[in-house]
Length: 220
Image (tube, helix red, strand yellow):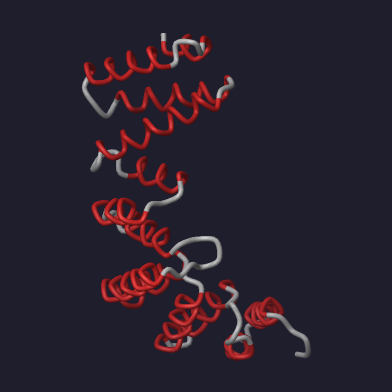
């Protein structure tokens, strides 16, 4: 397959599967992974190969391909596929790997290892661990917002702090759309604490942003 790409190998493998040639599908998928083993893996080809190998009774090979891909370009999808093979041992290995990468200052393209660590702990519903990583290494505002919303029931104090930061950002941004989003978030916060705490919070917002009339109308 001259000048082929990983995508080309995936297309051929899928074609073979579609026509009932499962062994050929496995062979083509593995060939593609071997040809491009020194490049950034195409996650779609990796996942296809892992699925095909598992169905063929070659789970150890499937897991090996997934680990190679994860250690080059880790992702939540790859993590969950690995998790099915190794359970908590897989989690421990993946977490150790990402912690070591974070300590070394490594980055994976556009994200830090700690970002994926937070997402893993979120998916595992282990919010103490997720917040510990966020506090130690920080995170993007979007990811912190996701963590806050996901853990409102278990970590209301942390979630309220993040929501309050988001409200200030939205109000300072200005515009009716931002004000409306801030008002919805404020209403959400009311379900997470006492009426007195919420009333004091709203009074503080009114004192701070009293010149923003359209926002004041929404608070009233």
